[in-house]
Length: 164
Image 1 (spheres, rainbow, N blue to C red):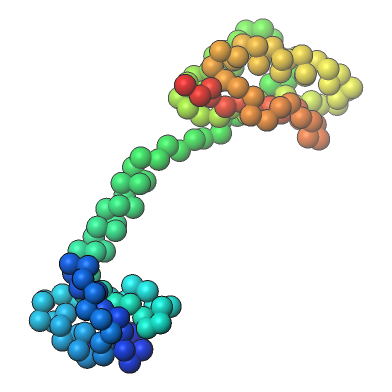
Image 2: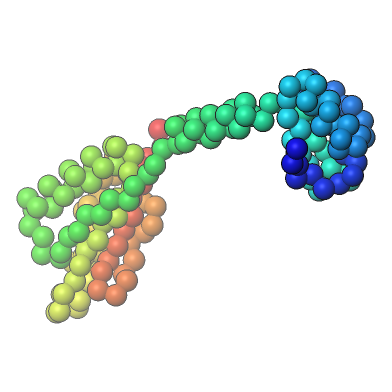
């Protein structure tokens, strides 16, 4: 019989959460074997260490089920990106705005990027106007999570779905 409990005496709790007191490892293992269960160390840093008599396989199974249920209930939020240019035409702008609204309705965040090239950098105000128009169009569905900010040659804005 191999066991990983190193302390000569341990505090034992049985399968019905009753304290059995401080026992030697051999005595605790014998009691666990009599019940057809395992001896599991639950608090190794206590003095003396605390061990519980339980069905270890069932315990591991219930733990994995708990983790699985927690993962099933969580919502993964993606960050979708919409790229614009300062001279984006009206039809393209409306098309991209509709896509952003569908992303937001699906519960995702949207990063709106206005990319500048060459001389367009001297007209950053055009990009800011474009982002304000975009924000006005998405206003009923989204709120600003990160306000417009210039990073190198791009102007970015992050929108998040409104809380219901």
